[in-house]
Structures are given as structure tokens and as C-alpha cells.
Length: 485
Image (cartoon, rainbow, N blue to C red; front, side, top):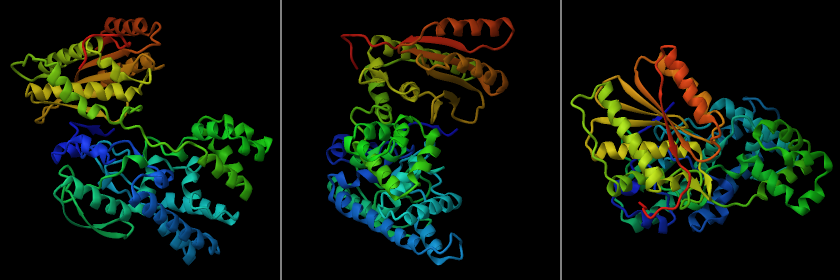
């Protein structure tokens, strides 16, 4: 799995007050780690930026209207058919790494849409157009039932089509920010070419640019990938309920994409069905991601470390040698400081949004950024690295030493928290390069007897002569306190 290190923000690299970016409605990109937010084409028209609401929306509609015209002329879905081949080319959307968005979280590079996916996608689109549907939004709505079309594909699609308009947006905001720029001749893998004045991304090898994106077109999941939201919104739409027959009312109860074949069969059953399907998708409230409150924990962690290290300094005891024991001693100090911050300095508030726990990955990133900040503050020659998803944080000596200390972060709400410890025990025993391991469980409710079961697992492993990961239970429940960061 890809790993992340110290995040490098656009604002820090270019000496910009983040509040200026916020006032301009621009995302403060992380230059060396993709942010898991996506451009949602269904938000374009509502943007406050004219380059997006007017120009980008027009570019998007025109591009897909053109594809529809070619699909109408397809004699048969075969590479020898000129219309088919042209539609397929126009539906090829390579990843645009310059926006630093998506799932390539160990870096800012991803894969974009491949040839096999494009052929499948074109054929489904052809079937829909053959029904008599000529709405450009059919291409994004297909994500709800088309295999392999997820948030990153939709974002790639939108970014490719509106890149010229995004560059115009950058021209305006970069001028207001006074950021130094250089001339770039940009070429996408599908052959499209652009010229623009952009800042350089120092975290990408070679001379690669940064393309800023407006926050009001970003979502953590595009509308057309979240069937539960579509179903909920549709069930509350009285006019839609009146038009759709009883046979599909069961679709409103589907809560995951695993049932997408049922959605697909109904949507492709006729023009009226697909048009009703589009109405259902559009009935979802088109709100962009709430950057300020960050409910999914995608951005808050990037800046918290500096605040923690400054307001709650920790003088780590630097071992004489950074061997396995030495690194483990540092990690233990950081874990205890992390406990102190959560239990006594209300950093536990960062574990919640709207009174409910944020996703587990937020807790893992929180520990990572705290550990990274204290290692930096103490000028220690070790580098914490975090998995891009839920899971472990590693501590490694930065100059080639293979030993490492593993820290895995779990929330008490995770139903597999005990199984996770058992799995880590096996990994710990098998991995020769894992010198020490720690299993940190943050109690945010729903603990039950999981803590007792964890201790029993540890004792059983120890009694069998196996190396057993240390268990740390931290009280992350919300509590009033006079001390705040």
C-alpha cells in the first residue's frame, strides 16, 4: 500500500496565508500527497467562479453532446467503425496529476482510464443513446452501475474536459495571489495540448506544474457514486414517486453499489426508465465538500502537527543509538503524549464531526501528524510513514536501516478491532524487518468487552512464546476541559 510522509502544502511552499486561498475559494493542495477529494461535474453549474459555472459547464456539455452524436452513428461496436473509434477516443480520460486530487495518496500520480474500461464504458453509453437518451449527464450517471467507474474516474473525466477552463481560473487566482509562475506546454496522454503560466510543483520529479482547483466543485464522493444518497433523495421526491411504477420501489432500499446490477437492468430497460434514473441522480442535494468542518477528515490533519508541537511541546529522550530498542523508546514516548493530548488537551475533538466519530483513517492520520511533528521538533533522524488507508504507521531510520516499529491505530467502533490485533500478530511474527509493534485502540464508544478480548489475545500469544504487540487503550470520549490547543 502507498505511504505518505510529511505533507507539503501549497500555501507553505509559496508563502501564502491559507486564509487567502480560502477567501478565493481555492483548495490548499498537498503537493506530495493526493487529497481524497474529487471534481464532481454535477457541481459545475453552481460554482461561484464564472470560469467554471459558465465556461467549464459549457465545455462539459459540448464535449459529451459531441460524443452522443458519434454514438448515434455507430453501425456496430467495432474498432473498424469510425464513429465507434472516435467516441472511444473522446471518452479516454488520462489522469491529470497536476491537481493533486484522487486516490494516488502515496504520491500525486494515478492511472486514469484504461483502454479496456473505455471500451466497456462506450458500449454501455451506446446502448443508452440507442434508447433515445441524449442528455450529457448520462455519462456521469453511469457510474452508479458501470463496473470500474468510481470517484477517481469521474474526476478524471471532468478534469480532462474542463482543463482549459481550469487554467483560465488559475490565471485569475494566481495573479491575485502573486505566485511566481513559469510557462508550461501541457500535453495529456490523449493528445490534448494546452499552454499556461503555472507555479511549479517541487514534489514531482522533473519540471511539473500545479493546477489549483476551486473548492465549490469538490466532493469526497461524487453524487453519482453514492447510491444511498440517490435513493434517499428519490424516495422524498413526490413527483418522482408518482411517475415510477411499483416494480422499482425496491431500488430505493438499496444501500450499496453491490446491488448495481439491479439498478443497471432497470435503467437500461427503456428511455423513460433512464430519464427517471437521471432525475433520481439530480434529486440529490448538490453540496460541495465542507472543507472547514471536514467531516471525512480529509484535510484537517495536514496542519494540526505544527500547532500541537508548538502549544504542547514534548522533549523526547534521544537514545544513544537508533537501533530497534532506541526507536521503540521514542515511539512509546509519542504514544503516551498522544494519549495525553487526547485525554487531557481535548485533541479528542478532532476525532469527531457533528458529535459522531470521523472515519478511522482520520485517527490514523492524526497520530501520524502528531508523531511527525514531534520527530521534527526534536530533530530526530527517524521518519514516520502512514498507510494511505486505515492501518499502520511505521517508524523507520531515514538512512537505510531496515528495522522498524509498527503502530496500528483502531477505533473502538470498528467491529473487527479484535480480529485486527490477531492479524497484526501474524504479520509481526512473519515480518523480519518489524522489530516492535504497538496496537493503539481509541475508545470513542462501542467498546463493549473488546478491550478484555484484546488483552486475552495478547496473553495467549505471550504464553505460547510468540511476540505479542503491545496494546494501548486511549480514552477518546468527548469531555469538557479548560485546556484547549
